[in-house]
Length: 464
Ligand code: GLU
Image: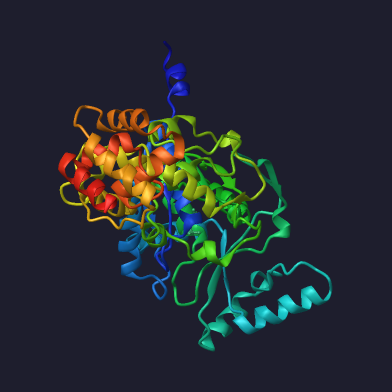
């Protein structure tokens, strides 16, 4: 094989990243983005990077960094590499220098108030509030005068207006932006701190990110960042072996809305703590969020590999995805019914064994409810007051109880013969006497757990 052919078939390893700002707890929208990036990486044996976007020193908190890590760990979303923007300032300085040198960054001196006035004037004239590039027109002398007044500049990236910005979005299809319709973005503040736009592109290059999958609120950022990538490559910035040599592929997913179809405040604060408190299993969240908003059915699939292998951006719709708590509860029950004894053992009441778990599992909406049912097995149970007729029936039951592999089958068959009862009159008083409940796990499985002596005692007590 010729060398050129080898090169053209060698593709960079899929590398994705989840880049939360540690200014709060993860909410369901962030969790979904993290999950999808994790799936893309795991699907192809690639790398998943956790990147902490902590350039905003004032709003970033270490406790949120810890909480983000803990939430991802609880969800089982493992990462191969962790990065922090606050530790990468020298790289941003280098990128800044390269772009400055290339004439793609310029200093600006307007105050926030001045910018606000410009914005209002533009809007008042019915024009889009696009920055007018006044600072670009300043002469050296004018700039020197601003600095002599003690005004430190903030810095904007100079968008190239020559050609439209285009990309094929993995979810939205072909995208096109006219750069002249966008403001040159501020990339660095007057206090030299960084805004999100450039560091993110620098990181994606340095970390060899091949796919950026994020919410559609970032679509315009992508247009700008594509120009930043291109400018950085043109300035020879991607120096290292592992660095990306071209912009990543982009995909933007529709946002999540509440069941009522609107962007909801509640979703913005709904996170892992609330799910845990409600007894929701990580697997239920994963099953829901991996398929929500796609054309694939949302099902209680407990096997992550199945979800990973079927994950496909082409199945994502462009309409907002509806997040419904009822779906989550339904999936949770479906997942709980599949949990193995080994998986839940440490969460079960003392003394409960695999047989107990398997008998009770189909009745649970949440694992936490298991103690209530285990209490039914271990007793004491609260029996209702029975009619005289039922008391006589239960006395007969106590007499006829024998023990075997299938004591429930034997008891109900013997009682049917002896009393002629069938259906509800046969089963209900027995269930009530043995468990104190009208509904519950299969008695065939429950009775062996209750045990012969205890069962006889309960029947005798009910008989009065
Ligand atoms: N820190 C940014 C955010 O949370 C990251 C966006 C991105 O994925 O590039 O919105």
